Image 1: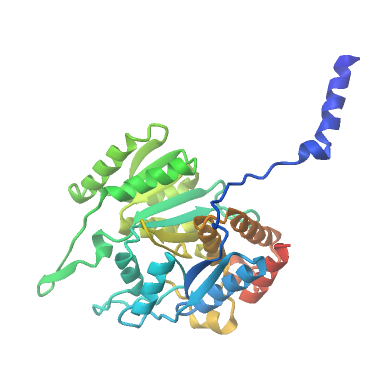
Image 2: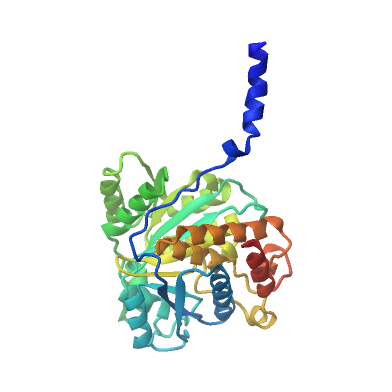
Length: 362
């Protein structure tokens, strides 16, 4: 009799509302940490004002403890205005829409100016499956961390003789250190270094030496290496094998966009650029893509990527409960599938998606 009653007792206990309650994990902020924080806002070009406007609406509805200092900056400017740089240096955090990048002609990218002058050496893109959004592969949760300021992206190139252009390529140890530190603090299990050291034996060889040296300091994290062309093939064949990927800048740009396409598209992948003192949050993959004119006219840009990036920003500012609330609302809208922009198989406008997120906040 007693033995037969055990399953019954377990069932009764499992249905108990008290036992089913879960404690939320919180933290003890320092006094004053709840004061509203100023964030520099750059709406940018193309779809930028649409998606940054979406973030502003959601932040206001949540009563998030931030306020925006808004500046108009466009990709055809020669430089980012000094007042904008001063704002970012003061606030230490910026939210940015896409800035158009001129092709060729020797015109510098404002995106690169921001990264170099603020020393935002680490770019992070989180590519993951969203529940309810069908993709070819499941269980994808990849973090691509790439060097953001050196090598090809340093812009240190010159014409040696007519028709011959030389570009510098070099890597530093700090991006490897950041990748392992990120993996350690976020309970990630593996770091993969992406390289082409079989051909670029000195430059990429130095990158691997740095990664191997840092890996010895984190014995609890698995470390492996993969050649970039094989990496791309493995990404489209079996992306679930990757966890954290650390790359030089050019490879990382390609790898991040490939991983984003596999996990659901660039319109839903968050990201940011971070240094020792400052951080800029923007759409993770194809951050420089400002969209076509038709998207802007129809107001059908996808705001999901920047909404999720702004959740990363809230967590960076030590407001985790607001970040969780925003992420949960976005994921609920995606899962329900009623309001989706064209890139996700729907016909919704930006505002319709924002309204659905606002409704899901309550």
